[in-house]
Structure formats: C-alpha cells, structure tokens
Amino acid sequence: MSQIRLSVSLLVVTMTMGVLPASAGEPAAASPDDAFQKLESKRNDEYAAQLEAWLRDYLVAQYPDRAAKAWNRDYSSIEAYEKSIERNREAWRTVIKPPTLVVTGEAQRQPHAPLSDLQAQWLTVPMGQLTAEGILAAPPQASPDNRVPLVIVQHGIGSFPERNFGIADWASRTASRWTCVTAVTRPTSTAACGSSPAGSKRHRAPRPVSDTPTRPMPRVVERMRFCSAGVGRNSRRALEMAR
Image (cartoon, rainbow, N blue to C red; front, top):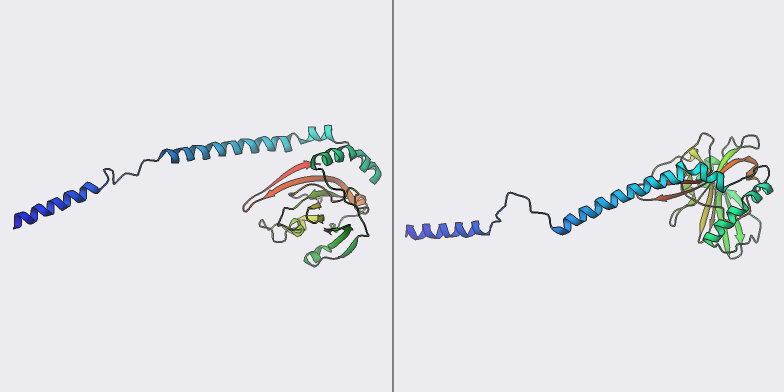
C-alpha cells in the first residue's frame, strides 16, 4: 500500500513539474510586435527631435534674415504703417481666405471684472450677425512718450482670452507680465497682446479681427510681434513669427 501511494505521489510531482515553463525563473522573450513598437517609438522620437530643432532654427535663428527680406514696416503714422504692410496682409489673406467682415456699429466698452487690477475693459463691436468681443488693457507705464510692444495672439477652441493674462493657466503665468488687446469673433477668435518693456514669454497667435487697427493704440505701440502656440496638457510651445 505504501508503495502504491509513493508511486502516485511521484506521478503527481512529475505531472506538476511538466506543466511548468522551462524557463520559469527567466523573463519571457519579447514578441516581434513588441520589438517593432520600440523601434517605431524610437524612430518617431528621433524624428520629432529633429523636426523641432529644424523649426527652432528656421523660426528663431533665421528670423532676422527672413524678416528683413519680407517686411518693411513704417511706424511714422498709422497710414504709413498700413501701407507698408499691405503686401504682407494680402499674402496672408490669400492663405486663409477670410470672410468679409464689416463693422456695423460703434464699439462699446465696459470694465472687465476678472481683470480689474489691470483696469481692463471688455470691448464689443457689432459686425452684422456677428459680434467681435475682446479685452483691452495697457500697462500702467504706457503713454505716447513711453511706448510698449504690441503682440498679436490667438487662443484655441475651448480656451478664453483671459488666459493670455494668466487666469486659470496651467503654468500659472501672472497677469503682471502681460497686457493684451484680445479680439474674439464668434465662432472664430483672435487676439492682440503686448508685453511689458521688461519682456516676457509670448504665446498664441495671429492677427486682429479687423484689418483696421484700433486708433488709440499705435500712439503707444513701439513694435508688433505675431506669435503662435500650441497648448497641451503638460506643454506650451511659443513660436515667434514676426518682430
């Protein structure tokens, strides 16, 4: 009887050992799909780094040479400035093919509570069935004798113009570093922002909603910058387009 039990026990042990993998103590070999995914990820990362380096060189390092060939701005007066950039505006219109928007009433201003510390104003301009809306604020030191930069920016879908001032911004950028003129036209929105003379990082993009500049602003504006940026969950990129 003991011999039978011993035989059965040995059989059970043998069967148990038989179902164990030969390399139970070693990691499983990577499948061909896993190896390819690593190869693809490495290749895409290298391409992204290469492309970003190229873009930084083209948009930033090469900008002075490109701007000298593409722009000939005249800041002596509003009329002179409009005339000096008309060729560039027309080239941009050809690219984006914007609809014809005509101002159909007077602009209205009222204090904007979320930015009361900057004495910001909320502007509304009727444009037929649409309404252009935006924020107007200027740094306290701005005056005809102390001009400040003007930066034109654009926030993305689902965002809002106050973010240009640092409100509800993931990076917690402070409003004191920014002064902006933001124009928002439903359903498309654009904005114009200016930084303090001390300088600050600039983000978002392209142009005023109307081709006619706001009359009081050019008298305190020293230069203009056009910027673009993509805002992700954990990153922001700012590309300076013009100076």
